Amino acid sequence: MLNEATLLNEEECYLRLKEDICRGILMPNQHLVELDLAKSYGAGRAAIRTALARLEQEGLVERERYRGARVRLVTEEEAIEILEVRTALEGLAARRAAENATDEDEGVLQDILHEMKIYYEANDLLKYSDCNTRLHHMLIKMSGNKTAAKVLDTLNSQSVRFQYKTILQRGRPDKSYEDHRAIVEAVIRRDPDAAEQAMRLHLGRILNGLRDLF
Amino acid sequence: MLNEATLLNEEECYLRLKEDICRGILMPNQHLVELDLAKSYGAGRAAIRTALARLEQEGLVERERYRGARVRLVTEEEAIEILEVRTALEGLAARRAAENATDEDEGVLQDILHEMKIYYEANDLLKYSDCNTRLHHMLIKMSGNKTAAKVLDTLNSQSVRFQYKTILQRGRPDKSYEDHRAIVEAVIRRDPDAAEQAMRLHLGRILNGLRDLF
DNA sequence: GTATAAATTATTGTTGACAATAATGTTGGA
DNA sequence: TCCAACATTATTGTCAACAATAATTTATAC
Image 1 (cartoon, chains in turn red, purple, blue, brown):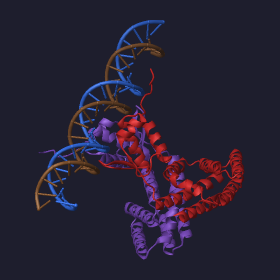
Image 2 (cartoon, helix red, strand yellow):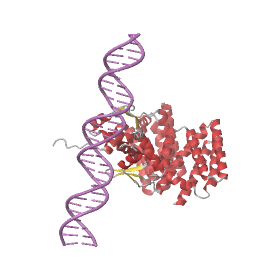
Image 3 (cartoon, helix red, strand yellow):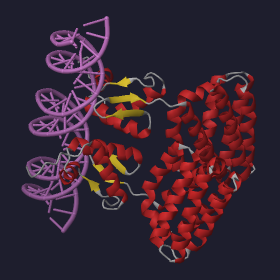
Image 4 (cartoon, chains in turn yellow, cyan, blue, purple):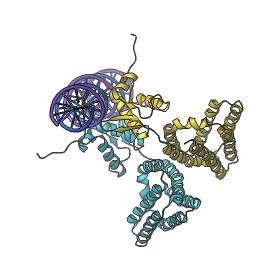
């Protein structure tokens, strides 16, 4: 038989939709018609439907009764709010990371930072940005606070569209590398206050960049 | 006709379920059978079903494929994580509140604080706790950050079960009133740093109370 | 030609039946 | 008695048809 493929279940639809929204394949304000999505994904309408309900709760989709779902547009104002929340939460994460850091953690952080420097000097913005993400994730993981991690993950998926804009802002990576170096240094010194402070400074700069952009 | 009542729609099911979980009518780990809920609420199974999917995303319910949904149990460890996140976020809120405060806001805060003192002296814990909630909400509202407000609201509904325990801890309200007074004072002074600091101190004490409890 | 009302269409919401799966209970054999 | 295989039951997942609603188009009057 040629087409053995089974239909996507709800969880798979959820993941696929989330990815397509985050990647921008489904654009903000785009109307999400259940039957169309079901056909194009190879899924049942029920699966799509509940997936959309979950995505609404997650803030990626808006639904209106009898009027369907659309990709939620994150306003500029909201992008700033999200960044403020990120600052508070990643500040907490950096603090806890400094408190909890093991010697292995230390090594991982330094490795990432080292890699970062290389890509920074090679002017490879894409890979630099990748290191950036990994460093932040590492600190969050080190904090041990899974609740904070989940909230941050949700917020990130809402604002991915904006993130890459700031990254590509000219001149940004320069200070950004120094910021990260300062954070890692504070964590390695096991200095929670300094770690939080450094993280706040870093995200504060990004926030200013965002304000300028608008 | 005697029974004019129309069935509950999805949104209503969602709200009802959320309330029943938060109030403890539906207990942690309790198995939530779709058909049973549908009958007892007077709703269709589909409405219950999608409501449960949304509540899963919100962290109030756990679902497992082919095994149904149950009320999620928030562990003690998690309650602490949530309180840490609250500290970071309400610290931010207090800071912003101090930055944004209008004269009217000032009046409202002082009114609540005054009421609080009365109930404190009358030893009316329930009404005292109510003022507490209102004060925190007011500060969050004053911060103007709707994203933070939403996150805090979600986290609160997850940990309501734990909250009332700490409130009823003997000796807690004493310091608690002083804490709130300090927060309000800093906000009225328009001193963001002090406001954040005071809020952190306040929630830090509650966190210690929680740790003692475990 | 324009504005209002009616008819049509597209889409979502709901229902009931059935399939898939996991949990439970039962039987038969050592 | 205990265990394994099988049968039964309860519950969830899925589908297709239909009802309810909103959006769109057409028809009508002025």
